[in-house]
Image (tube, one colour):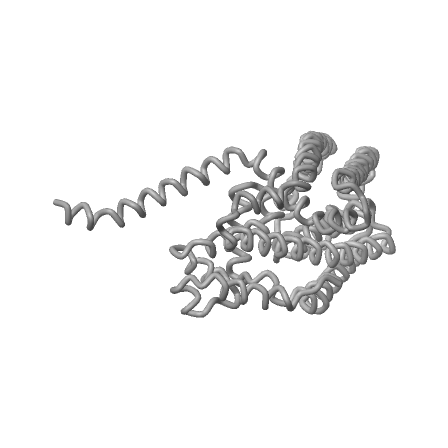
Length: 371
């Protein structure tokens, strides 16, 4: 009887682990509207910590250095809200003009399709192109933006408390983990990795967004600055962020000026983002993420499903955190090995050699210096 219980215990343990994981994921998905802003505030706090440390070395009081980060965050979010709100007001004023151009575009497409065996009357039902429908879409968008503004203020509040707490947190962490240097080392390496990711992606995302904005301004596309900000935000979404950011300005160029100008927008966006993401950025990023391409794609899908659009924005930091968590336990180190782009040696995976793991991480971090 004892042998049967012993034989079943690994299975029972596995089932309990799976059930616990499912329960945790279900809870996270139910609380996504709270968890998402909390994680973003934590990432911003970690990314700002070098700036706060630099100010403290210059003689600033730690609380003043933390408040500086809070003020900068409030200013940035305030500018973003003002930009979105002013764009919505302009959109409401320009809706009749856009409706007229959409109808003219529809007639042009219908005329071009008249010689083809395509029923254009079914292709353009006209239901989505009515002015009342467009107004309805705009009103719905305004409601979503209003809700997002509320989340931004919640995010600012979280950032304020986290940045003030970050002044004392390193010492508290060292005291709590005084008997475990590995835990402190893991947290420090995780913080460095997150800061590196945020800084490098912010710099190159800003470069691409600036060039995209200049392109749209030269072409006369409405709300060019708004689309530039959208391009910057979506630069944190791997693989598909660029394509999502391209859709609104391309469609607006089509409505404003026709197919030729829309084609220029698509070609310009593609060229700019290809050069930034595939030519210049890899020279600085190196192997800093140490996540395989498959893991990057799967993390985007998983965290996007779990936490919504915010999850897609923070998919990479969350995956980095998950990988570091797996590395901290011998039983799960093989999962970190599977997630890694470089991989660990068999001795590191089997023996759980933390120093060797740290060596692998330091080599990864050493090849990436912020521009």
